[in-house]
Image (cartoon, rainbow, N blue to C red):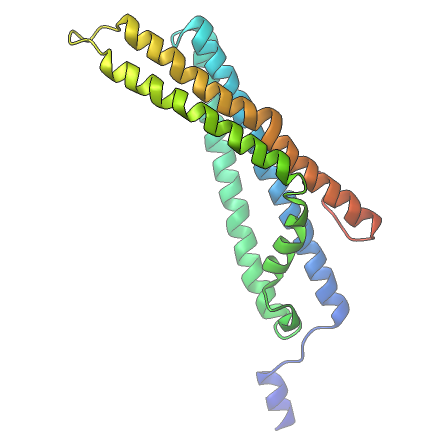
Length: 212
């Protein structure tokens, strides 16, 4: 009878295994965050370059066409890769919940949730800088709206591009350029720096971190 009960309710794994599992999850989550924000930074850089190329050389120029093709391929590659990683993490999390069931009940969350909470504590270390960046983004939204309205109101009936549409397009590009530039130079670097500082603090405390 005792053997049957043990088979139905297996004893939880040793505490050392649970610690190792949670440590590995922490490393994976932080590496995933590095990948997501690094990808966002690359896309912001491509966005800035595309807008500059469009402003100075036009949509039919070689630099703009090259950057557009690069952006499309980057979206395909990074999108698929991140999707695969996320699916793998979720599936592993479901397995880990079964593996360490009963041993992490004191945390009140799954291993992935525990690792995510631990890894993202440094996400908004520089919250004031991130907030400043978002407020600065708001200043460019009226430019985007103005550019769209100017383009709509200046559209010609014969299908040709009017001078008003060109002006509206420039205003629109300046608005998007400002938002991309703020993300590239301010918001994403501040978030990444916070994660790196948290990683350094964990390394000094003897916790495993992702060396990215």
